[in-house]
Structures are given as structure tokens and as C-alpha cells.
Figure (tube, rainbow, N blue to C red):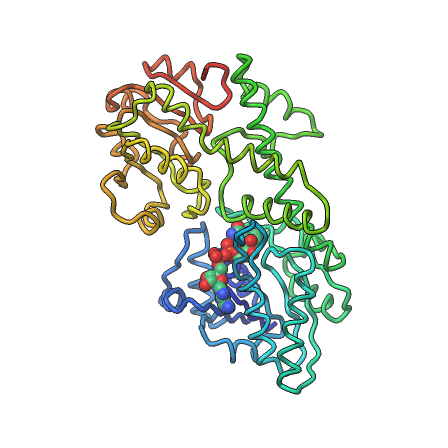
Length: 443
Ligand code: NAD
């Protein structure tokens, strides 16, 4: 099929590459000319496992193209995806300016039936606004063109995006148009060969489904962080509690890891945006507010532990960080816990030496060159001259470190384990002080 995708970020680029891989002809449009140029050169602007060969291969086969020119792209697409960003507005609600700008662009060009698909995470009612924006442009042109607007939220996880896209656990399609539904079913048929993963619903329910999914996941994390904070105070180990509750199939082991708080481009903004939607409809979503509040405080947790350990004297200290990305297998630093930690450390007069397998370049882009941040090429380089080690992102490479080497390199042997990667007893046996999250020994 002929597909057009607006936005070549994590969602747009991965979706475009995966749809091309299934044999479709995909044109990806972005307003960022630098990004488009890099993509044309086979230089993938984001780190996502498996993405590079998929993009390069389909580009070489002529099934995947990149452009800044919306006009031919709109002429090309039978199905036109909107996969641009929906960042938080000043009050936390989703900023729809990019989505609506694309809708107007489509309206200015559309000259035959197309299915316009909202893949961006957008508040309930946005499909109506997209439909309206297109209609206004068509009216201004004095033409009548038939089109449908479908909601097809994306559930891929950064770090597993290609895998999730090629093997989705569900494909939510929100539409009441049989013609649009038929086109979407045809497009997704290759992803449904094993069994039908389509969950068909009305547009508003589809829009809400995405927010409900992210709010549920964020709630699980904040819940476990709350239990960790209680465990710490009562002398219990949240890691044992986690295993104890995870064994109940109604709860399960997935996504109940306590830590240094959630970040990323989705959970923080989506929880806030859902709260704003609820508020706008006269309902105060108290649980969502608490999820957000717990997370905000949790992101300061590592700093508090470090500060307490050093008796409030952090000026002149150097803290080594392992992990900068908001989670493993990505270079995404949006709302990453490491940012809050580094900014608090800097404000207290400390310096940071950090290692991350993928996010160093993005960190440099965000913070520039500054004297109190050294980005290291190797995890153990970060320890040189450092007073402590903090684990911020649970990359696999950090799971079984050489504790003797860590003890031998750090000026004071102490680990602050923001992801509970290590067995406290094993760390202490190696001669290092250990602080984890909710491990009954941190007060
Ligand atoms: P992103 O910021 O990585 O990419 C957005 C891209 O859209 C940018 O390259 C930007 O230049 C481009 N863009 C902006 N305006 C444009 C326009 N008028 N025409 C063409 N391109 C334009 O964003 P992302 O992480 O891919 O997220 C996109 C949407 O998908 C968001 O609503 C997000 O909430 C949602 N989502 C993201 C994820 C994720 O893991 N990142 C997962 C599911 C859903």
C-alpha cells in the first residue's frame, strides 16, 4: 500500500521502516531538514536496536523515502499517518500545535480519498479537531474531498521499538468508517498472520486507551516506589516484597520494579495530560496526581541518599554515574532521572563523571561543554577520582561489575544503586558501602 508518515521520530521512523519491511511504499515527511538529510545518507538520528538495517535496507530497495516536501508526500499516501510530537503545554495538557499543523497541511493538498491516522498520543476529541482542521482547509480551497480520520495509538517501547512494531501485542483501531477500517485491516494484515491482534473501537475510546495504558504503567512504578519508601522506614527489603507480591498472578512480576523514578517522553507527559483532560471535564483524578507527585519526589531520592551519606557536604565531591538514558537500550534523555540527579549535584557544588553506552552524545547536546561534567568512554573511567558511584539506568553492562575494581578506584568506597541491581550483602562483602531503593538499610 502507499503510506505517508508525518514525523520521523521514535514512532514515525520505526513505523515507517516496519511498514516498508512488509512491502508497503512509505514516504516519511519531517520539517527537520537536518534529520531528513541524515536519514537519506543512512545516518539514523536515534539509537534503537535493529532499526538501522531496516531503514537502510528498505531505503535501498526504494520502499522507504524521506522528504521535507509535504506536497508530493500527501499525493502519494492512501493512508497518511500523523506521528509528530505532542509535548506538554504550560499547564501540562498536550500541546496539539504540531498535530494540527500537519492536519492543515493535509487539508491544503488532499485531492482524493485518504485515511488520516492519528498515531501521536492525543487527548480524547483530537480526531474531531483534526477532521475539522482538514475540513476548514478544503472549504478554503472550495473543494470537496472525502476522507476519514482514524485513531491508531502506538504502544511501542523505546529500546524494543522495532520488535514491538513488528510483533505488536495489540493494534488498536478507533474508527466508525467501514472504508477506513478495511484499509487499516489490510495495512496491518501482515502483522496479524499468527492471530488477529486488532482491537476495534470507537475513536474516543481508542484515544483514551493510550492514556489509560501509560497511566496504569506509571501507577505501577509509583506504587512500588511508595512501597519502597515504606520498606526503607520499617526495615524491610522491597526486593523481597516485590517477589512476594509478583508471585500472585493477579499482580504479576512485570513492571513492579522500584527505582529512581520514571522518565522518558511518554509517562510524565501522558499522566499529566490525562489529569488535565479529566480536570477539563470536571473530574479531579486524584490517583494520577499522586502517581506524579510520588515520581517527582522519587527522582530526588538518589541525591538525598548521596547528600545524607556525605553529611550534606557535596561541594568539591565527584560522583560517578553509570547510566544517563531514561531507560536501557535507548539514547533518549527526555525527563531522565539522571538529569534531575546531575542538576541537583551541580547545584550542591559537586562534579559528575558519567558513562552511558548510548546517551553521551544526547547529554552533550543538552548540557554542552561544562567543567562539572565529564562524559567517559568506559564505565570504569567514570570512577577515576570519583567519591561515589550512582547507578541510574539499568543497562545490562552494569549488572555484574567488578566490585573489587570499583572499590580500588573510588576515593570512598560507596555505591548508590538507584535500580537495585546488586545484592547488598555481596557489595558490602567486597568492601563497599551500599545504598539501594527501599532496602531497609538506607536510613
Ligand atoms: P519525536 O519528538 O521523536 O519525533 C517527532 C518528529 O515530528 C520530529 O522529528 C519533528 O521534527 C517532527 N515534526 C514536527 N512537526 C512536524 C510537521 N509539521 N511535519 C512533519 N514532521 C514534523 O516524537 P516521538 O517520540 O516519535 O513521539 C511522537 C508521538 O508518539 C507523540 O505523541 C508520543 O507521545 C507518541 N508516542 C511515543 C512513543 C515513544 O516511545 N517515543 C511511544 C508511543 C507513542
